[in-house]
Length: 449
Image (tube, rainbow, N blue to C red; front, top):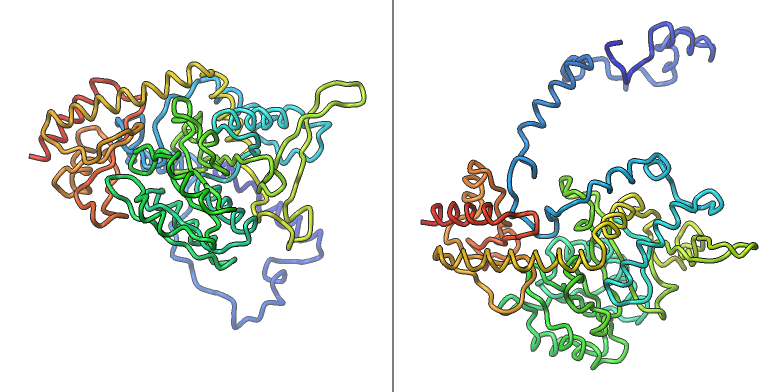
């Protein structure tokens, strides 16, 4: 058959029309006034058969640059990390791949346990006792945290560091329109949140302070000092957006006093895949447990004392009155959460720490090579696996030339920070080899000259 996904034959159509008592397609639409019907021909290509279509799509796809054909030094929220082969094997199983919301625990124990394990691992990484069963992505998870802080404190002012991912800040702005929150952005100084400006801005109307750890520039914010400033105001909450891989080495935000820690688990078992779908996580304190958006899976025992899992504390608009709902997110990323769970389990606690350390060591090697080449690494101090480099030329043009050399270059910071014209944000993960780093730096240095 030429059109595998359009299996209806003319006889099938006639049989269907006869069943409903209509002689023709024209008669089927007789109730639509003649004067509003479209009688022309749409400006579309003629349909291709399956073989032609597959070839056309393959030719188009082959024009794309991808992580298999090019070594990537682009991060800024989406990274090229090692994914254990077992991840695809597990998530491709039909009981996970096609699963819907596990409302019936008696037939969904596997799905529920997988989500429960995800929650447990996120809780350990963040240093907080409660984590939900995942959200859409890191940006929406952060915006949900902001809304929760406003509802919990009954305050309207939110302080957001400009060192938070620009796209996450945009999502916060969108979310804030409904409840009419006041979003105040705090400037950066030397790659970090300006603590003096933050201290001056915090007052009795501040619901929460939002920082990123490590921040968008790769720098590790001084969370202890920030928490002291935040907690100088009673009820004000500290919200931290964190790369969970970095928490395999860094002190968890929960241990510094963060009230809510969010982020994206794309770094564990989820491909870049054009920027999504990914998987947001949301962790918080016991006192906020009943205000957490999304779903929570709880552990229990059945009447025979056997271990079991159920959805619990479902404070969503589908379950209770809308004016009492904690969130309008009515779905999660269970399949991607499962991928992250499998990846974290496969890598293991000690392996995760080694992976984080490897990112840090390779990024520092990159920093050393860049300086030897004469390129200026802008920020000093502690950083994870990203660094800002002044390349002295238009980043967009440099990146086009790097593509021809087999590299995906770094992020053009001028797009969001006009003061950082000609500055590139470079990410170095455990996937990059010494040879790739050396050649990339050489090519970047040659183009810079």
